[in-house]
Image 1 (cartoon, rainbow, N blue to C red):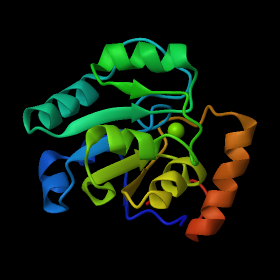
Image 2: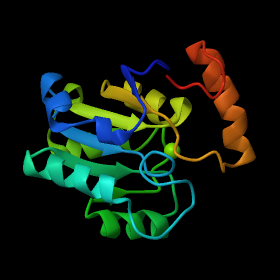
Image 3: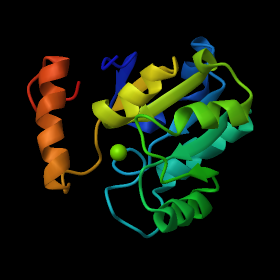
Image 4: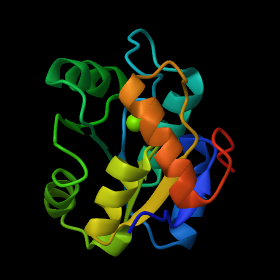
Length: 163
Ligand SMILES: [Mg+2]
């Protein structure tokens, strides 16, 4: 339940081809430290915008599924042009509803995030294709720092080495 199906360094590695090869038709994205550094505002990176555009062009659905406060989710949803859900209460809530709205089966949906105990556990609980990415920022809550240590234990790797 805590193991991701795949591990990548960045969301932009989820190319239309990568997704198509695995029969994936939608991507449910975590926001903080997956797409955007934790707690930051501003302009989205050009690389991320280009990646989202490439997905849209190939008909792949993208949604934000975040535990961040609604104002932050709304801000980034508008900036990125991606519909968002949040705060949802991952790992227990959020993914099932988003998959239902997409009218897809869980196996056709990639759940992507930087945290094992929220994103990966939540995605595995609903039977989606889970992808763990390297967190963008180390500027994190103490809570998250502690969780990183537990994640490293679960994944059997040295803390800080994500691939
Ligand atoms: Mg995150």
